[in-house]
Length: 151
Image (cartoon, rainbow, N blue to C red; front, side):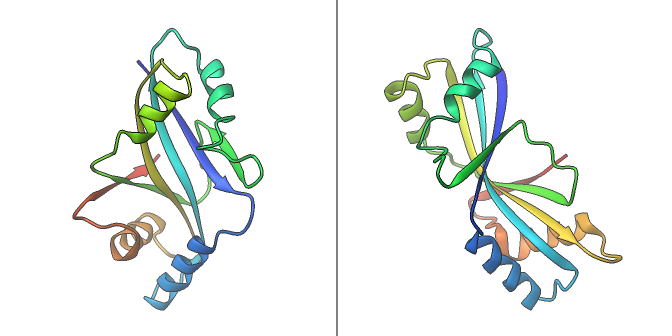
């Protein structure tokens, strides 16, 4: 099995991220200067399919990436800010079923979708602690979600 990751963001300003940023500032996170949000996908595929072949096909799938309003990044590496991903613990199989059975991605063995949050702080703020506190206060529900830091 091979794991392929994809981050999908909006080309236009993200009102959800802006609302979350405004709310976090009202909650006392004055050190937070920017907050970005993307959809994050983890695909597991059979080894026989190369990453390039799979990637070129999956970014053209309009149920994941609408070329008119999204940009997609394979194997995203974020060198700035602090990045966390929030996943639902129970992933429904609808996306996997659609991709594998209806759209011809038979090499897919699993799909996991989450929300990627990228935090940017100013000054002397401890960015990892600040970002994790913000996740816990607003962007994560412990009853059905989990979060991980993207390193």
